[in-house]
Amino acid sequence: MELSKVIAPIMPFVSEEVFKNLTNKESVHLELYPECKSDLISEKLNSQMEKTQKIINL
Image (tube, rainbow, N blue to C red):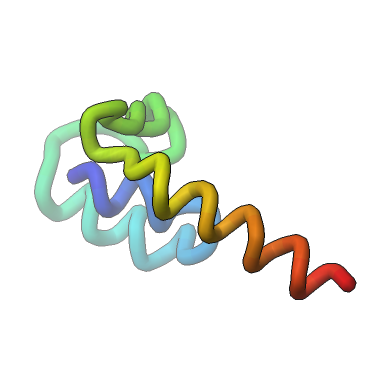
């Protein structure tokens, strides 16, 4: 179900269909957006991505 919530902003109709077929809830768009798990965040990767974004924006 979390994937349906995450993809809802970019694939609203697909995520809604999947969500409704797998749950008895009204709509994926009425659900809270999933919280990120802080233990899965890589500081090294975040730093590398920030550098990459700065290079791209030059």
